Image (cartoon, rainbow, N blue to C red):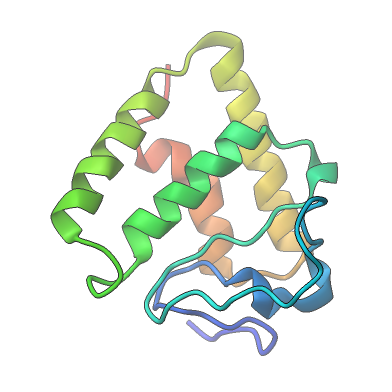
Length: 139
């Protein structure tokens, strides 16, 4: 995979760190305007998603946790603990049904569209497009 020049990766993962996106990503409203501290080497970090997209905050929180647990190197976190946490996280997401699952599908499509429009690498877009299917999150 060839990285876009403007994206910096902390891991061989598919998700760029928010600081690598420069002005494309807004700072949280209540965050200080200081330069954010860098994530440790080997940490996989999902970028900050603009509130204006309307993606449910709990889905974004779950995606941030998923990417960190799945993509971070062993030096950053205990692999056995990360695997256990990932199993629970995916199990809870698999409980989605009805309108909740419909909303998550719509939000994942919105995220994939956003990623394409921001010219994220294809592997990252594919991650968003396939996330639900790959994790057995279906009705």
